[in-house]
Image (cartoon, rainbow, N blue to C red; front, side, top):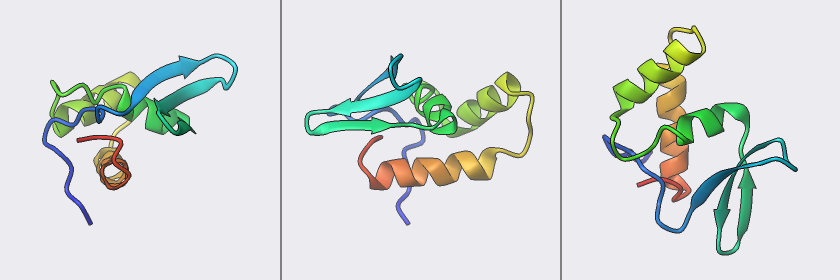
Amino acid sequence: MSEFSEKPKLARLFRMQWEEAQGAYVLLYPEGMVKLNQSAGEILKRCDGERDVPAIVADIEQTFNATGLEADVKGFLEIATERGWIV
C-alpha cells in the first residue's frame, strides 16, 4: 500500500474539470479521460497542495453534514496515489 502526500495535489499530467456531457467531474490526461464518481470528484477537487488530509476530511464532512469519513478519504487517496493521479 502506498502512502499519499500530507498535502496531496493533482499530478502534473492531469487536469480535473466538470464535464457537463458526462454529468460528472473528469480527470483529463494526454492518453484520455477518467470519469469520476461524486465522492472521488469531491475529494480530488480539494487536493490543491495547500490542504492536508485532516483538512480535506473536515471540509468534506462539513460540506455533506457527515462524520466518520476519514478512512474512506484516506482509502481513496491511496488508490489515487497508486494510479498516479496525485502526488
